[in-house]
Image (cartoon, rainbow, N blue to C red; front, side, top):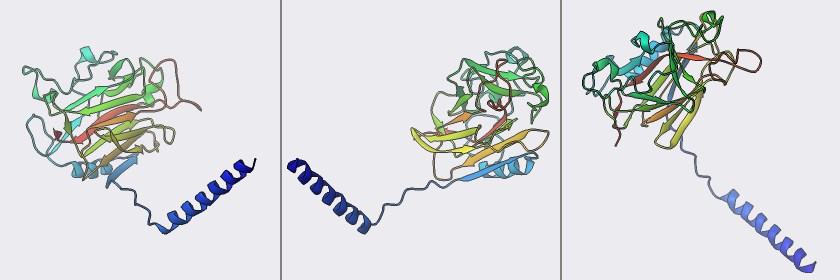
Length: 258
C-alpha cells in the first residue's frame, strides 16, 4: 500500500509539472487550408456564375487544355444508357480514340453501391410521385448512384488513365430536405481538405448548389454524399430519410498530378 501511495504521489507531481510546462509553451497553430465556398438554393444562377468565374473560362470540349473549366449536365447521355442501373462510371472519360471529344472530360465515378443511373423522368419510374420533387436544373436528365448514397469522383487527364487534379468542384443537387444530409468531402491524395454541406431547398424548384475552390491545393478526388439513403423504391422522404439526386457537375480543367 505504501508503494502505491508513493507511486500516486509521483504521478500527480508529474502531471502538475507537465501542465505547467504546457502552459508556458506556445501552442503550434493548426494549418488552415484556404478555400472559397459558394452555395445557395432556390434561384442558384448567381451562385453558379460566381463559381464559374472561380473555375475559369471557357467551357472546354476537347482534351489537351491547360485552363478553363468542364461541366457535366448528363443531357448528352444516350437513351440506351438512361433509366438503367448500368450507366458506366467512365462514360465522361472515354479513352477510346474513336469516341467523341465530348465524352473525354476527365471525371470518373465509383461507388460502394452497385452502379449509377441517369434519369430523364426525375426517377419517377423508381419513386412514384417524385417527379415533382426531383426537378432537373438543366433538363432533362439527373444522376444518382445505385445501392448507395455515395459517389467518388476521380479526376483524370481528359481522355487518359493518368491521374489529375483540380482546384474546384461543385454539384447541383435536387431535393435536399434535411440539414447536413448532403455534402462533398475533398481530398488531396489521401489528405482530406474538409467536408462541406449543401444547403436545404428553399422553394418549389428544390434546387441547391454547393461548390468549393481551393487556390493552393490540388483536389485529386471528391466524395459526394447525396442524401442519407440510396435512391430506391424501398425508401421515401420522411422523418428518417432524405432522398437526393444530382444534376450539373462543374470543375476546372483537370491537370496532370505531379
